[in-house]
Image 1 (cartoon, rainbow, N blue to C red):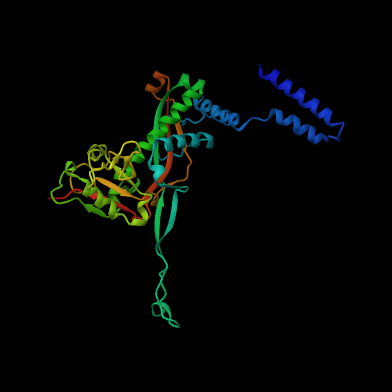
Image 2: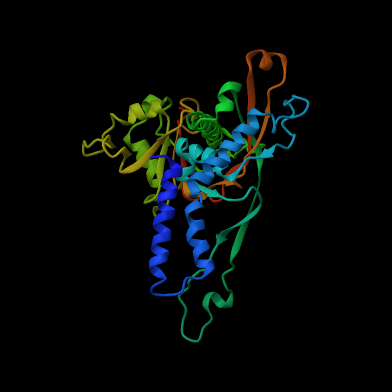
Length: 352
């Protein structure tokens, strides 16, 4: 049915109901206006679509393009994209990155976070005697500083497709940008130096367990090595802890059995020793410098992300013009680091 015809029928029905209501009560002009205006209100989904449509058509018409057409200077401030568009890119990032699911995403990008390092202490004390000889326990906090570092993802889009701005194109771009951000976070979560990037687990000062003597290669890892890693995590953290391993170690773990001959890998539940695991092939598989596996409570690893995304685009330049394409680069500002490593442990190979 035509939309205008449908609207007319709804208005007719509404008018009839209002007329019937006159028999029972007096209907004010405001009530009549509200009844009619509600028929023309756009749903949130439609508003969101209109916002996206305008955003993409503005890109197609060059509204967001830099006047010079030179986009190599990544320090140049971009145009903040509509929140509906930014949220869709972030949704794709969330879907593509288990990092954000097991860690804590903190909605800010610069400042200082205070984390408790020492709490209250209980003492046994005799009647009429001050606890701990009158020396109270001292509450202490560690200051965790963080700041947002620019992260960028880019893509080339056909000008013809841009002008159409169809939902499938938008979704494709959202997915590509979100996946690009997620891939970078996956790397930095392990290897990030902390300088203009996340502080990765390799550089976070996490206490390491050393594999048994003679276990100098990843193929030497056995059940006892993993059990040592598991037990190294304080008991109060284990219930909500998970493994982070490489696909290489995953293949080895699948074959391991505990001291009772029971496999420690459960393919149906996707667990190792009853705890979930995640694959990250940025973890080392040889050497004694960096760990080959991690186990711990990752909610104490914070990703600081204010959530805004800005964009720069250009359709200038000989190659872009000849291929009739628009170059689009999206910027976000994030940081990541552990605020407390007490519930995290690593496993390293033995040196001999």
